[in-house]
Length: 253
Ligand code: PEP
Ligand code: MN
Image 1: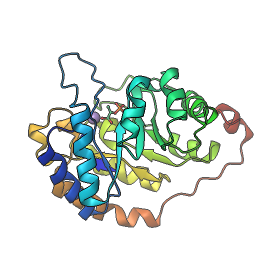
Image 2: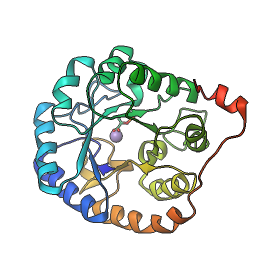
Image 3: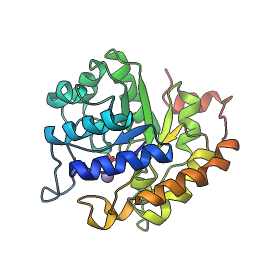
Image 4: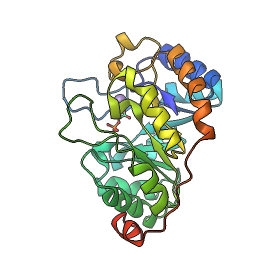
């Protein structure tokens, strides 16, 4: 999955969609509703952004993943999105989780930045119990005492989640590292650890991005990443578990 942090214009989305599709991505990401830590930061284009994503799907055949921040927007976003994203800041928004359980679309559930693996699994269970078993789990880095990186990629969470659940697990190297130069090394390690996919921020001109430009790849860097990852697919780990303690600690029910 690849695309801009936020949908900014039709041209930006189209250009990105065509490039990431050519490079081999199958899902276009892009936020139309943005949860920003600061109220002064760009908040997204809303419905206008959703319409641009729909056009990009028509032009490229890519599936669309985009975030829903509130249960009030779920029905509207489900008209445009193929996969509904729950952001890190919303992982414990229970009204939203329940609404997404009824939305009729697969859900991409991002790990809360201070959530344990067990808490992530509990949020997934709420979505499943509300009627939706189609959930993709996403490790996107957690908050630790380390400040060099934006978050700390918990790479062990990848095999652990694969062992304690039947759900696909993907990694977001962009929000984990917070820096363009870390996207490739974190992606490699994610694939080797057994991740089923990646979600990567890509922008035609990261220097001018309205959000998360520092951690976004440009179009040719994404193409290069996709090529670089090929050898890692061959050595991808297939995690299996024999330790009952891990199953309990990981929140398996
Ligand atoms: C995003 O995907 O742009 C985003 C806001 O991610 P997260 O919820 O993981 O911070
Ligand atoms: Mn972002």
